[in-house]
Length: 152
Image (cartoon, helix red, strand yellow):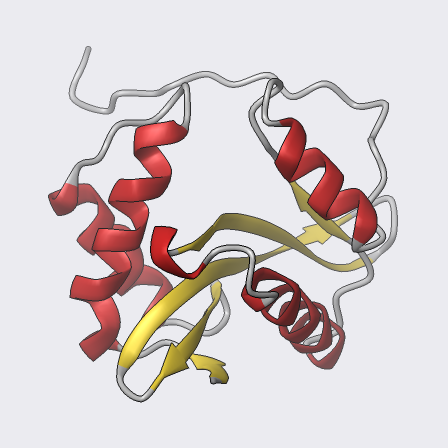
């Protein structure tokens, strides 16, 4: 097993992983065109972020997005973790733990002072996993608005 940064060639496998993730999430549905567009944007600009994958040979077994922004509260770069998923056939093999460790290391290398992530409110196994990895519940409550640029 090897954890590495994803490349454009990994996109088809990343889309399959995202499909399985979005099938279990409440707010998102698989949309390959949107997924490819988003993946290409991240992979083409390291200032936006990185996608880490865990592979066996050339097979992508898991992925996570590390996206960058600036916190004015910290006066520094921070990271947002998105799309953490391990393929169904490879769960419970410590791959997620390895992927999170590598992501935290990469975030530190890139000057991040904090990492934030969201999970579905009822995903208690994810809550337990992230708590075991050192993440804490935040007192902040996420709010979201979808903005459609096509509407006038």
